[in-house]
Length: 157
Image (cartoon, rainbow, N blue to C red; front, side, top):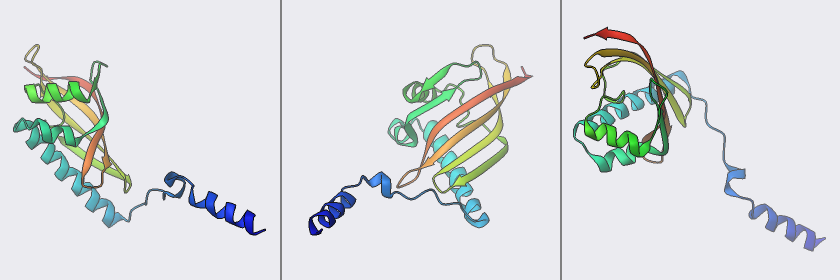
C-alpha cells in the first residue's frame, strides 16, 4: 500500500507543467479597458520603432511565429515583415488608424481592428484597408502575433 502511494505521489509530481497551467482570466470591464490601453500604447511603441528603424526592438515586438496576410492574399512571415517595415514600405502597423477597436477576450490576448489609408508605392494611389491584428501578452510586454489587411478600395491619388 505504501509503495502504491509513493508511486502515485511521484507520478503526480512528475506531471508536465502544462497540466497545471491555469486557463486565461476573463477580465472585468475596467481591466479590459486598462489592457486595451496597454495595447494602444504598444502599437505606438511599434510605430516609433519602425520610424526609428530599430531592428532589434522590432524583432522583440513581433512574435516568433508572426504572419501577416496582405490585402492581395500574400503571406509575410516575421522576417519579410521586418524587412518591409525597415525599408519604409507602407504597413498597417504605423499607418494612421480610424475606427480603432481593441477587444480583450482574456488576459493573454487582445484583438485590434481598424481602418487605415495607405499610399501604394507601386502606383502612388492611396487605398483604404480594414485590418485585424492579434496581440499576445509576454512576461514583459506584448507581441504582435498575426495581422491581416483587406483592401476596401481606392481613396485618392
